[in-house]
Image (cartoon, rainbow, N blue to C red):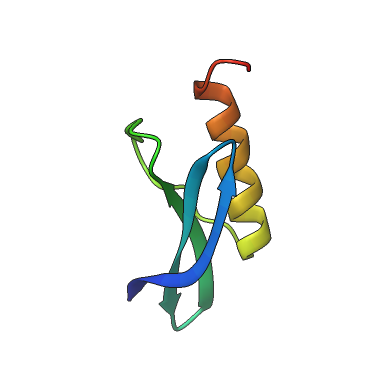
Amino acid sequence: MTKMTTTTATHRGVKIAVVVESSGHGRTYSCTNNSGKTKSALKWFPTQGDAIANERYEIDAVLPLM
């Protein structure tokens, strides 16, 4: 079952929300953001911290340097 968590963060003015997927094998985490850039697919990680770190990296890759 996939659902949004209450965990949020902000990076370079972009709001990040954490998504958790629970299964019989445990939980995995991914993130979405409000940057307006579309993603081809969600990437899943074993911890929320890993998911947020990846999302920050992806935001840095698509936003111009300030």
